[in-house]
Length: 193
Length: 156
Image (cartoon, rainbow over all chains, first blue to last red; front, side):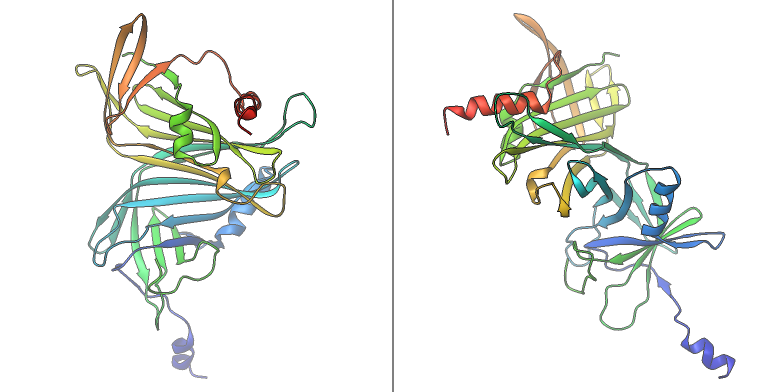
């Protein structure tokens, strides 16, 4: 096979400014400027294992919501889903969501600025005693999350056919690839918001 | 710079926003740079002997305008906590293990009023006036569950 033919068969991710951003996107991979590239879930699981944590971030979602045609979302809900296993609770997901302002700047590169905020979530399962006494309680580990105001460079990957293009958000030396996903993690089709 | 923090004694207000929940409280805290709002709700589980306590905080940047006596929040922050059981989980599925709270953008005028005793009052950007009581007891979900059972005892 000639070199020219080989090059033609390699998938090339072409990027362009995004024109229509709405609905849910999951972060699927992280690339560093040095060339490191890793699936998001693998990186988060490895990071948690390294410090001996039982819980790890298993999903990060950017939800731009439904938007009227031709308009850009002015808010974005960014979620972190943490997978945990604990006695009395079993295996469960804790999802912390922050709804913050989104500001768009056209240009090359286009930019998306998200305002900051912080949250803290906790949950307790209680079981009524069979007789007089206090309820049995099982508390999930608290989850704290702070989102610093960030301005991302944003581009959409060029896709062939009738598909929602993935997005790439770049913050300094780190690039996050976001794929359009449904709430159950399946691929999101065009026209669904 | 005055700082204050307190508990809004308004279980009905909180449970009204969280159908299926039997107890709730809202806690506000301020300092010169942040406004924190926390919602705690106790909601019935699908199994009759179980309840779930859900807690969520939203923390937004703020400034204190001493001249006008108000906190100013430039950017809205909404926060939501959700806990989802997997198939080998002991947690109920469904929306009853979720809770949310918002710090709206805008001005929060604060007043110290004397109505027999001194109280702090604050008006939210939506126009709701909240009166704060210093929370001097640490109410936990076990206590709240027992109180809710007592209150519902005559109704069931």
